[in-house]
Image: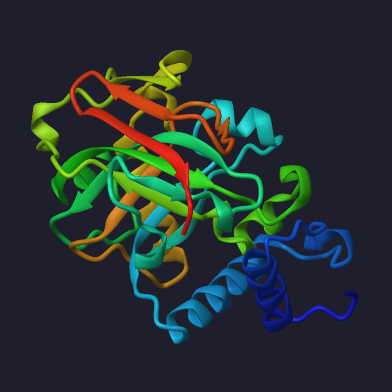
Length: 262
């Protein structure tokens, strides 16, 4: 496609997801696509999801860890939107038959007790709005072939959002050292990676503050009750159709995901 519009780009990405089709980055043919336009495409994509019956439930940070930024050749975090259709139950199976080339990554997840509005939110202010902290996994699944994209592409694609899950039991922010919280990622019981909370912007609450401040610039905020995925702690692990993936946290406990069918 060469005559791109915000609407046609959103439809292009949703069609790719629904048809499990790899596509070329939009920037290959919309060469002057910028991040601001990418967010407009993301907004239109979410509007169409809501129109189809989904409900917005939260926000996620993308590309917050050094590992993810280095892997993707990108040095700037971004925000994206979560809906109820993306959530799967803790320790359940992922609908592998609906995915293109999924990867899993461990997350520290916040559930918000209060609205969080930018600008100028800092770590202390962000934590004051959090009700509980949870262990989580996100399954990312870029619509772009080989996960090849520029920043405007991945913003438009809602930061490669697909599915997520988190533990039912959470802890109060005051009861956990978020910077030192260790996670060990295992595939079929074998360790493949590990990291601490410091991998996410130096502090997971810094990622939360970043989300609030970034959303303020878009005229948005994080409402009470929202789910916030603060970003992958480790590099993403490619998901196959047979293995079992576990994230073992020091304080937050363990969470597991395996492939399944929708």
